[in-house]
Amino acid sequence: MAQNLIQTIKPGVVTGADYERLVEACKQGGFALPAVNVISSETASAAMEAAARAGSPIIIQVSHGGARFYAGQGLKDDLQAKIKGAVALAQHVHLLAKDYGIPVVLHTDHASKELLPWIEGLMEYNEQAFAQTGSPLFTSHMLDLSEETLEDNIAISSRMLERMSKIGMSLEIELGVTGGEEDGVDNSHVDTSRLYTQPSEVLKAYEALSPLGHFTVAAAFGNVHGVYSPGNVVLKPSILKDSQDMIQCTYRGERNPLNFVFHGGSGSEPAKIAEAITYGVFKMNIDTDLQFAFSEVVGEYVKKNSRAFQYQVDPFEKDSKGKEIVYKNKYDPRKWLREGQKGFMDRLDQAFTDLGSKGCYAAPAADM
Ligand SMILES: [Zn+2]
Image 1 (tube, rainbow, N blue to C red):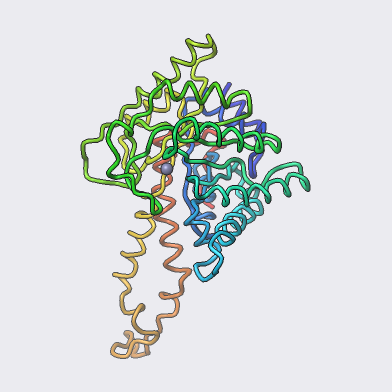
Image 2 (image 1 turned 90 degrees about the horizontal axis):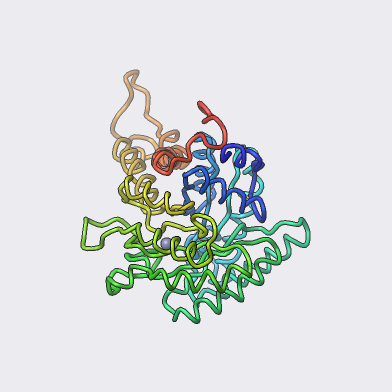
């Protein structure tokens, strides 16, 4: 059933009703998709290449800092750089996703209240794209108003969802606080009780938002951004189950009515990931582990070819035939960026396996 549902979705960027079907297919099929933070064309292309190899749809997302980097750190207008950097990523993915042969969800990561102008700027591009093509540029955006009161969080999210629904977009909200530190937001000292969302908060958000449009929920269940030595915070996926049960009982509806997002997936135990998926998690964010996977192999490459990063022509050594050693084919950035992409894709391949989505869309490609 789930297999058939997912096969009805065409390769390329997925929005609107197709996205809702994709989320449903994940929940019915008992798997989730990795949501990969990218910062550049080579990480975006590597994400699509990894998805094609795994035979799975993928979620590609960008943070405000990643969007800034995508546009270029030299641009002076910070807000415009964040808006245009995200748009540049979206256009890159729109142009290439079909060629990779897999469905791609395009999303933006955490936007706190101060970053509302970023999302509003992106909404203008989405509305323009919708007017021209019938589809928005992005599939969904996230508003992270977890630092505001629940009432403010729900009120602002409702206004945004109303605007997004008109053009077939979905909204991700955050309830409770994801611990740790990411992209300059440091929640590593937040009171531990706030790291666990209350099911009653989830019910309130459900009641307000479900009449307005499609939305997903990043609920806190002890998950943290970044990777740390095991600490005091315990992952409790049962919080997700309690929230689903509360809504299901209140409205006598179907099983797992909520669409949950797992933030801070890096470094999580596979058993806890599998448990969270049974409670309606369809998306798991993975950033820190992919950053390390990219950098680790580049570090190894630089160590192995250290002279190529100091000299264009070796001033001391000659090859076995007495000819000079030229390092151009070693320091060419394509060489070490490709190594970084390979490390990134290998770690991502493990994520497809952990989340159970490998081969769910098409048979994994042997090689590309
Ligand atoms: Zn997050």
